[in-house]
Length: 225
Image (tube, rainbow, N blue to C red; front, side):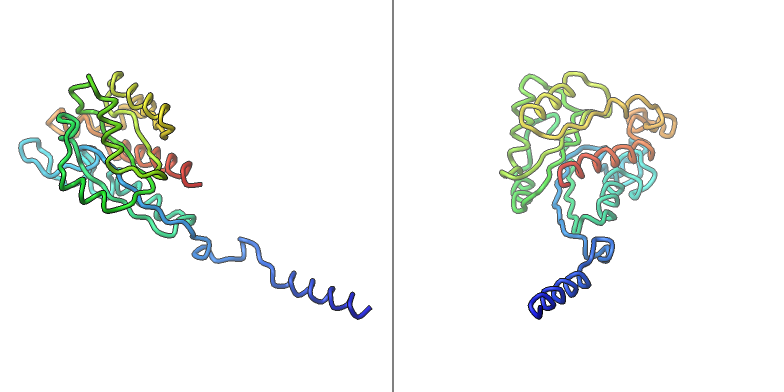
């Protein structure tokens, strides 16, 4: 009888100390850190250019740095209670789109880090598609390690050949592909009429930047859930 009473006492003590996730402060639930590399072009970042009528120093055509997709995407991730630490490295490699060559100093700088996720958010300026699949894979391989996840997006401006290359490579290598078909369906996602230079105006508006950030965040959370 005393033994039974002892077991009951231990059981009650255990129950009284048990807690659920709802009882734990949100900060204590944060447990995942993530290190992300974004490789992009002027949609990611473009310095001021008086000749283009562009005076920002962030994602081209956004009204402010806070409204470009990089800052919006970062904000979404950093506000999520599942993540304890978010590190994002972003580089404009638009010259690669034409030359398929990377600055080796950049390669050395970036390969000193391990990235959990690499995001390929470019393709609009690719001019030579004759060997594009191999060149794109080579670009990724510069920074991808065995456990690194990869996200590849479609293009802001319709380019069937480039977009199919991105989609097919993603399917072949088990990368996450993010279609931009729905993005292109709304003219409000672009900055038409807001800039005199048509090339600048063809870049995403604040709404478009938010759409890109949302699409990338959704893909990211699918990889780290």
